Image 1 (cartoon, helix red, strand yellow):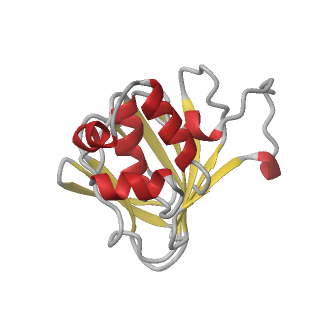
Image 2: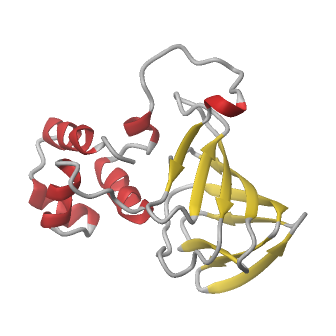
Image 3: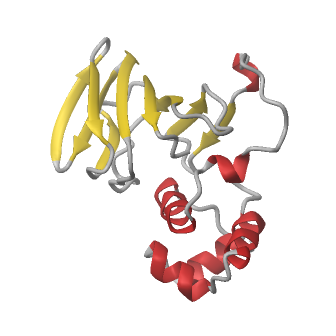
Length: 180
């Protein structure tokens, strides 16, 4: 997620918001926002979601270049987002250009539950575990999913994905409306 700081600053200013305004709207400190905007700090997924929600855009706003969208996305052409500790890798299986649904392949490597906070956003999600085991915590309730299991929930409920053990977990998620 490096290089998005100037885009955040540009969008914030276009909406006539100060750093303090964005801080109040996102729940992040003014210092952290300033560091993110100057690319001094790479934001966590949670911090980034707080920023996009406050600025009323999707994550795709910061990553998509305005270009013609192909219906076909090759494996080596996927947009990919990797957390700082590389415990979570998000591969976008659909373009986010004005679409109504989004598919994401999520790889959880090792212990992931220590770094992420539960998030919530408008919409619905459905996930399917392709490989391994994972835990999905929805509104404080823990759901263990094994290979072949699926889960559906209202995304407005606070939720977080965790790896169940130290083995890699691969899952595919559908989200509507797109939030990334």
